[in-house]
Amino acid sequence: MVDVKTNLSKYYAALSPFYLENKFFVDLVYNYLLAIAVPFTSLVIVIISTFITVVKLRLSMEWRRDRANLSSVEKKENAVTRMLVIVCYVYVVCVTPSVLNAFIVQTVPDYLPTGRYSNLFYVVVAFMHLLTAINSSCTFFIYYFRGSKFRSTLHSLCHRKAVKSGLVSEVSVTNSDNKILKN
Image 1 (cartoon, rainbow, N blue to C red):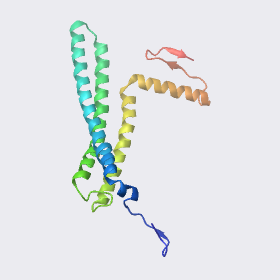
Image 2: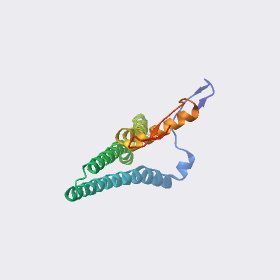
Image 3: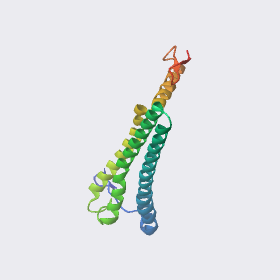
């Protein structure tokens, strides 16, 4: 809002005419479907599917251990299981505050952008956006540090890009067995 006398702009939160005319529908879609149902459902699905995957992988490893001596396969499966659990744990930690915030919005009447607790609301929303960015960033680094194939593929792509741009005149690309594929 611009004050014409002082020529200063002031920001304040207000409800739009569209919202006021369609309050029931907007609240239903945004507050219940998008803010509660979708994130809560995704949390439950991630937790349950991670649990089932870990249990099935452990059963599979025990069966293989009984049938043959496959220690290298077991190490790889353990590493994949750990990486899956870490990615899921980071996701759950980063998404849980959003779900809790959505429940708080529904239960505390003045916890709204226009309510008595508006400053707290904006701080929490900013924190939730930060957690979303952290979740996305952490996933890349988890794959990089825990996944040898991801790491070697990324290095291979970076080397190709460096050769094409003229930063590197000669490059060796190796596969997972460290055999030179290209000079």
